[in-house]
Length: 91
Image (cartoon, rainbow, N blue to C red; front, side):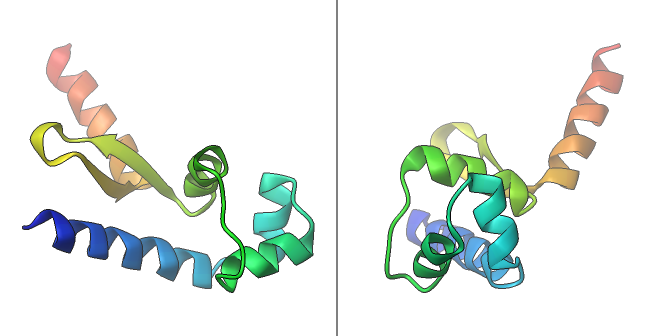
């Protein structure tokens, strides 16, 4: 998969998760006003990299370094499953 396709797929996944997450939950999680959360979700305001990194777990996503290709998004459940399998394989 080309990097641009991976980026597009990642962005699509993030936007889908944001769309189904209540703005009040986003605001509470990031300690924002509901007005700011509304502006961010509507694309009228941006977020810092730090805010973005705190938003991902709320959406059930995690960034994982994948070596040559950069990063990939996987669900928190998938990450936990991979960690469990790795621990079992190493023990």
